[in-house]
Image (tube, rainbow, N blue to C red; front, side, top):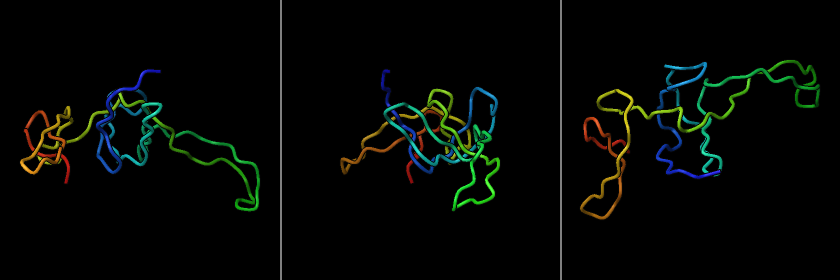
Amino acid sequence: MERCKIRIKKDDKVKVLTGKDKGKIGKVLKVNKKTNRVVVENINMVKVHQKPSQANPQGGIADKNMPIHISNLMIMCNSCVKPTRIGMKQLEDGKRVRICKKCDQQVDS
C-alpha cells in the first residue's frame, strides 16, 4: 500500500466527497498515516453487534465510527468556508503552515 502526503490533522473540519455520506461535514477524530485513513465524527457509521460483558451487561447493537480513506475527504477552510486543497508555506520565522489554495489564508490556528 502506497503512502501519500497526509495534510489532514486531528480536529480539522472536513467534507466528504464520495460514498454514502457525500456532502456531510465533520470533525476529524483520528488519523492513521499507515493506512491513509481517517475517522470522522458521525461519518461512515456502522451497527456493531456486542456480546454482553461486565462493561455492557445488556449487550445489543451499538453505533461505531469507521475509518474513511483520505482521498474521499476535502478540508474546509475557516475563512472562505469552502472545501479546498491545502498548500504549505514557510513563514519568516521558519515555521511551516498549511494554507488554503482558494483564499491563500492560513488554515492552522
